[in-house]
Amino acid sequence: MKNLKVYPCALMLGMLTLGAAHAAEREIYFTDFEDAPTGDDNLAGYDEWNGTPRNRGCHGIDSEAAPGLGKSAFIGYNSPGNSNTSAYVLRPIPHDPLATGEPIIRLVAAIGLNDSDSDSPLGNEPDRNSFFITFFNSDFQTLASLNYNNTEEAFGLWRDDGIDTYDTEEEFIRNEIQLLVAEIDLVSNTWSVDLDGFQIFRDQPFTAKNGVDINLGGTAITWQRGPGNNWGNNWMLFDDWTIYADTSKLAIPKANFEINSIGRSAGGHITIQWKAQPGFLYQVEYSDDMMNWKSDLPDSLIEELVDRETGYTDSTTSQSRVRAYRVKRSAAGQ
Image: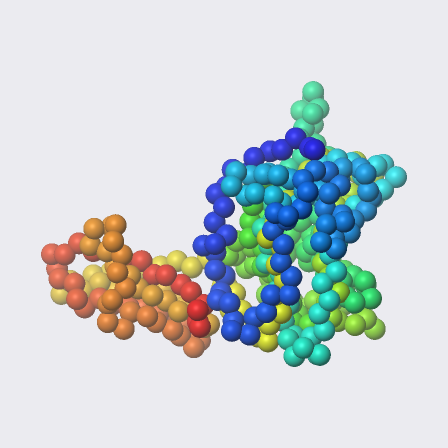
């Protein structure tokens, strides 16, 4: 078993909604790895997961990589050997979008990339590598990947359509667990990715490969070193690996939601303004003591059908009253 670093973030996966569960949403695979035996090399062979190389300790199951997380899977840390340029684990998850009438596939998972240690007495940068979350079809052909590139030369999140790679110009956070949502429309051949509530990209081409079946055969996680690079002891944690099939897309937030302005009229009425997005509900809440929050203001649940600046005026306040406000966003239909 590798030496573990403790992730410093709090686990808040249950609080990150990223849109409501659609009535048509169907879970086709889930694992939290709690039933898996812990240890190096114990992921391959568990619950139809496969992986290579074996017996190198470069993938497996951790008992508690972060406080309160429970068991999770990992890939990385221990070298797969200098003769190998990659190591991978995969899980077949077949889904035919045409036969089921469910064109949307959604991966939701907790992901963390733990950085390499520097053991150089000269303080040189440690060796770092890339980690790919890959979708393949029923013929086990790679369709597309999201690349967590941990190298200094190209650090960040990259989109791979099976032919070319594209810099999303967005980054992940090293040594923290983040909630990944990747949503694929297998019929329109587009996909979107959201990380911890922030949009990474939206409705980009999924696979550029010609003559391949665009369905789901399964998912894979690959650890890869570039030409001339050495293996670093960086590693990727993944947990709560969930695949949904759906008939329609979730409403993924376009940007981090925030209140743009708040003002008081001459009569003491408070007006709050923010940028609203279709597909979401906005509930205005208030508190007169900053402890107990209420949502019973008249007409305080707001929905907009287009992107626009919107707002709410609390006409129940008086000039002398001190009152705090907040706006809670949730997906329409939740």
